[in-house]
Length: 290
Length: 245
Ligand SMILES: Nc1ncnc2c1ncn2[C@@H]1O[C@H](COP(=O)(O)OP(=O)(O)OP(=O)(O)O)[C@@H](O)[C@H]1O
Ligand SMILES: [Mg+2]
Image (cartoon, rainbow over all chains, first blue to last red; front, side, top):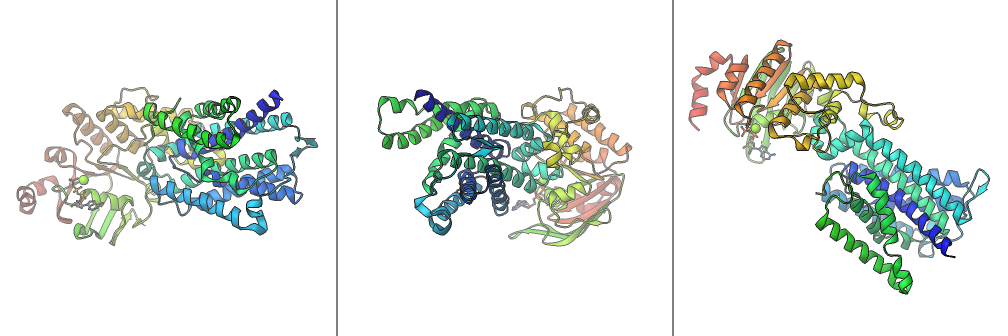
């Protein structure tokens, strides 16, 4: 019983790691204040769930979940090209609301508030991941691969160009860098991994509805990125573990789950506030928040 | 090398650049001078594509670069140093320089597969460029931690290593100490010897006359004189523009 609970927590940590590492690419390395990450997560979850329910094999579902989210990343990059800082934040926030509204109202496809039940557990190469321990291995494997890919991108010259455009967009342009291309790639890759995380979530819980993808879902991810420290992948991994675990003791103190939900958000918001005041670079942050 | 034809840029009622035409010759150092607010930096912004011309045309070599985006103009052979510091503060000196060398870093798949490390040749090239400007700092040093003078030198080195046909410098010695100033004068003279084409903005007349072969004088958004330093020194209109301030 207890170990089942631990496995559950570890799976959540893995999913949060993928989500926050990918947000780190857009925010920490590229300086894009992207508040649309939950929308990409939702797109991945719905794409994967709908395909799986139509009988498509899991590996195709999860890859398409990433690719469709990525496509939306590219699309979102177009209008936000000229937008900087706060405006980009507003535009991407708006995107989150639009996606939420679509999942809620396009009932023919998403069944709206009724949600999509019965999403099958993954089967890969004949191996079933319906057992949670197996699912944990799958999640950890994908989290590690995501980490390695994002790490490789971040330290490659392409990643350095992203960071250059973050530090000084004008100078990057003057040196011949197409900063629009840089930013849209960053947003799209970031969206790809969010889509993958969404797919994992859908196949783990086996039920999704719009309430899993409200703007409130962004708070823990944002908190992980900022507390881990902008442009620090290791800090992000650590923060994903700590922030997932912190609210858990509430359960044992005997709070009802109706209070634990909101209490989590309050705790995250408080931690975020404290970090911003006392340690604006997070655990290992290399760049300061502006 | 560079040609401006009746270039115009107004900001509301301010006629920042008001029908400017001039051309600069290859392998020479040309200075663009004029009182504060006469439109010099605006001209640079128009040349480099950061601002769009209201009207007029700009050519780099035989290429019409009017209103292209800055990165395209850069890749057609323009390199620029700004009036204020524009380094990538969270990157090292070496990374700042490496970004300028070529656009290999924009090839996403190659970078993803790890085929695009900073090569030995590039590192050597960077070292040489830093030696050329005489910067005594480890290439691994973060640019955000450099002093003002060191930043100026890295920017100069970065602009030099950025492939170009024309180098434009906005007040390269403004605010630097006399020693560094001498150093920069020497760097510019070396560039000229190496056959570089340079257009620079400068307030200081002594500096200008000591490095420039040709001078273009602006006042209130217009070119009021053009010629050799000797011509300009004795030009009445120029003296008025400066003394009449
Ligand atoms: N982005 C802008 N918006 C509005 N006005 C501007 C802008 N940029 C420049 N100006 C105005 O245009 C005029 C020319 O400015 P510019 O910066 O080109 O002068 P400058 O010759 O470089 O002066 P300085 O020697 O002080 O650097 C000034 O009156 C300035 O206030
Ligand atoms: Mg100026």
